[in-house]
Image 1 (cartoon, rainbow, N blue to C red):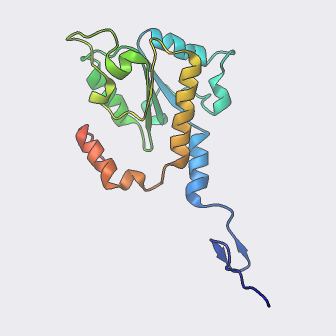
Image 2 (cartoon, rainbow, N blue to C red; image 1 turned 45 degrees about the horizontal axis):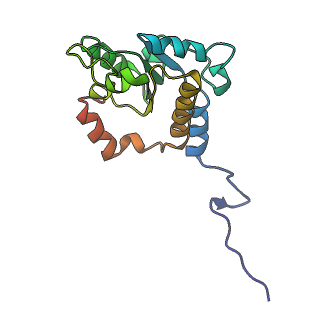
Length: 180
């Protein structure tokens, strides 16, 4: 008796696809992140150490630092952000092309840190959406690299249509971010 086996998913005609377009694009995005450092204090020094020879962030596809928001897709906010600097940070975020991700490095960027004053923004998530938080005061370079790896995982597994979803639009409305 001969058992008929169904063709594998994606099989059409004389061959089949080994992967999907979402997977290929996700892999390309994850391994070619162009970070924009927005460093204001001691967390910025620790971030600089991740680019040095000992830690070498270039091993993870983030070698090219971009100092123009229009050429970056990963915003790394490291350090204390004052309330006066909040609108500048939002403008930098708005100028970045889609898809874009945000890494909040350190206690000050994540929650205001030890500076519970009128002039310090108590977390950048009041101004822009954050994808990954890196705790610490200041965090070690290994922690920053782990945060970048989590961003890579997010970029690799994110659906191409996620940014068109209602959930994503509601999040943008929460932060008063206009889409064009």
